[in-house]
Length: 275
Image (tube, rainbow, N blue to C red; front, side, top):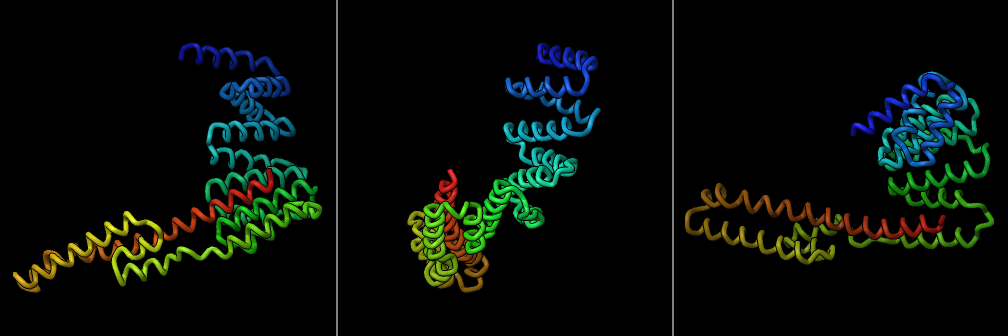
C-alpha cells in the first residue's frame, strides 16, 4: 500500500513538468501496460487542464478502463461526455452508440432507444450496422421480435445472404415458441394446485405445491368438522389461502422463466451469427 501511494505521489510530482500531450501519451503507455489506476490519473489530468482531441481520446480510454473493471455506469458517463465534446458528427455518433451499448447492458433499454433513434443513417456503413445491431438487441429485450429481426438483418450487408437466412430461421423458431404459456400455467394451478408447475416442467415444485395445499385443505376440512367452520377459517384457512395463491403465482413465474431460457438460447445463436 505504501509503495502504491509512493508511485502516485511520484506521478503527481512529475506530471507538473509535462504538457498535456506528454501526459496523454504517458497515459497511453500505462494503459497499454494495463496499469489502469496510473493511466486513469493521467487521463483525468488531461481532462482537467485541456480540451480537444486529447481530452476526447482520454474520455474514450477512461470509459474502456471502466468497462474492463466492470463499472458500466461510469463508462456510460464517460462516453456521454465524449459524445457531447466531439464536433465531428460521425465520431459523436460512435461515442453515443458506445454509450447505448452500456445502457443496454444496464437494462436501460428505453433510454438507449431514444438515443439510437436520434442517430442518422447518413453515416459510414460500419456505424450504421452497429446502430442497427444495438436496435436489434433493444427490441429483443422488449420482446418486439419482428422489429428486432428487421434491425438485426439491417446490421448485415445485403451480400451476407447466408447470415440473413440464418436470422430469418432463428426468428421463425422464436416467434413460434408458445410453451409453456404463463397464463395457462396459472389457470391449471387454480384448477389443481401443482398442475401449473407440472405443465411448466418443474415436477419438484409441482409436488410440493400439491402436497402443501392439499395438506392444508385436509386440515381445514378436518378442523371445521371437529371444531367448527369459524375456528377453521380463523386458524387454518389463511395458511391454505397463502399457499394456494402463492402456488399459481409461482406457476406463472416458472413458466415465464422457462420461456426466457428458450429465448435466451435463441438470442445467443443470433449473436453468434455476427461472430
